[in-house]
Amino acid sequence: MSNTVILLVNSIMLKRDQNALFLRRFQRGTLLVFPRLFIMDIKTLLDNLHEEVSCSVCKTIFTDPKTLPCLHSFCLYCLEGILRTSGRHDVIACPECRRESEVPGSGNLPDLPTNFRINSLLDVLAIKQCSITGVKCGNCDNRSAQSCYCFQCCVFWCDDCITGHNIIRANKEHRVLALTDFKDEDFENVLKRPAFCQKKHHEKDELKFFCKICETPICNACALTDHEGHVKIPLKEAANESKLQVKSVIESKKENVQQQKIKITNIEQTCIQVQEQAAAVKRNAQTFGEALICVIEAKMKEIYDEVDNRTAELLQLLAAQKSEIEREMKMTETVIGKTETLLERSKSAEIAHLGKSADDIFPAQEVGREVEQVDCDLEDFSRRFNFVENETLIDLANTEGIGSLQTLTSERQAKAQRKGKGFIMKYLWGGSE
View 1 (cartoon, rainbow, N blue to C red):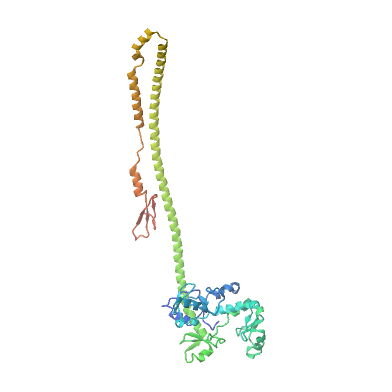
View 2: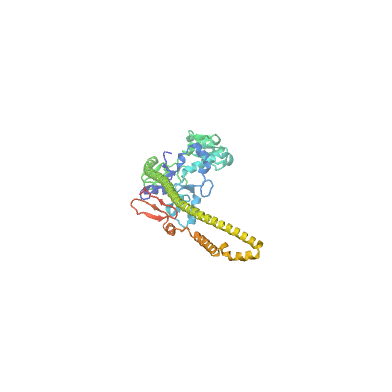
């Protein structure tokens, strides 16, 4: 891979004003940007191969994978469909991140960089599935499960064509391996194969130079034809220049990420502080509420005690009055009994004489006064005490509440006060007053 411009970038977001050259080279296909796949070990890669070679739009295996500037790759056919339905020809939105990118050549999507890494992975997949689907021979185009792979030609050969390949003297040093004999390190070598020219009829020519005028990698044939007279440098040298540029961008983004991590940590710490303060405010409100309830209950007990004392006094007076009335009533009933006996048993002369002393036996006026006095006393007792509500306190609690919540967003900002309806809560962002 030394002769290709490979950037091990993991979704770097580039600013156009600072990295115009980078984006321009990317859109022209100059930069071959491969995501995190190079960092993944070969065993993990092979275990997740289907996931790596599946297009997120059509959900099938990639065909002609193209990479957008945001580093997301999709089938060329899928991108053409997205561009066609968008109603625009110069800008395409990434199906993954929705980032908009300029289309090379005002609508020429095939000019987007080819994802050679995915193409290599597709060959790895074909090797692993050769016993089921077979592979296409790079010479006769026939499919066969009994095939070989040449690591120098980077091509599959069927059993019929490999003989012709091997008899050519120039291929004497080529390493050829049967697909059924592949091991992990062989798959890794397939992934390290060089990139080839994408121009028609140049597909087997390796990219070796970089045209400074057109800012694109080219093969030997392109250097002698389309780019004749242009300033050209070895592709490795161009790769080193681009790597330095991208590494600078990466370092800048790493600093941004580190600053964002610090901000996230600060936010998390602030969230903990806010939760702790909220809990403290609730505890304070609960303590105050409970204290207020204790005061109310104490006042209620005072009223209860006073009511009990007055009730005991009044009941004692009423009991004494009741006893006196009962005593007088018993005496009256006794006199009534004796008088009735006299009326039954006495002679007429005795009864006639009894009538003259009736007032002495039943003092009528005094009895009437006693009954009237008792009625007055009972009516007076019923009005001795009553509970009068403190309406001012109720109105104050309903209108003013029993406290308020105060929030300070910063020392430089004014306090925003919101009245509470049932608790006193004082919440200060930076401390307490």
